Length: 111
Length: 112
Image (tube, rainbow over all chains, first blue to last red; front, side, top):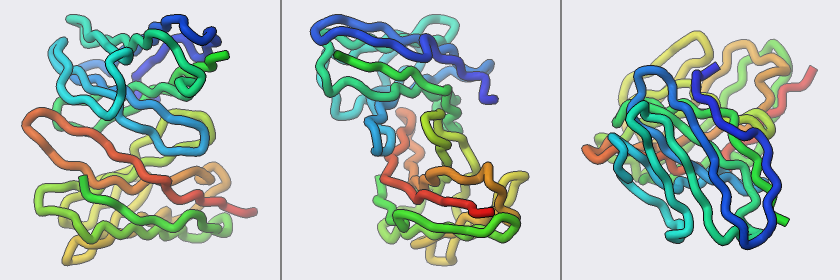
């Protein structure tokens, strides 16, 4: 077990809706990264948060946004959901330049 | 990030060593080699990482060639539970943080 917990584990949303996914980081970690993994592909980096600020972003549109809280937990928000947003969303916690440990992910299905 | 090349799939007999190769010919001096694995529909699990020297932990050994252009992950006694997709990743240590760039990985199947 990594100590990184994500909620919910599964979620079904309708196209056009908004969704919020949550991640609690491992004790002592101050950095959270989010990844999207489509079926049959490797995880793709969305963005990273460090000290409550976005600290790097992958090739994802602005409707993907996030927050990090003082306790280092984090949220991923996706607006105007599209069918292609259906994926496993992974959260990883670490120290800023340390090894990343992943949670079990949230399976999002957009219908 | 430097690109890595891995075989798409490999098979291994239970109890034998599994040797998973990875090419990273464009690796730079400050880039680490990381290995993760992912069992179906679970989050990636960290295995091991290294910069120049060979590394060993309770899960695996990592052998990095002297020119650092390739590496091999060794699972000394593979079990059925080691069946997973194994990702070799070259990660840059940046002052602003770091990201992992996953490729397609190697599907390792351990057979009874």
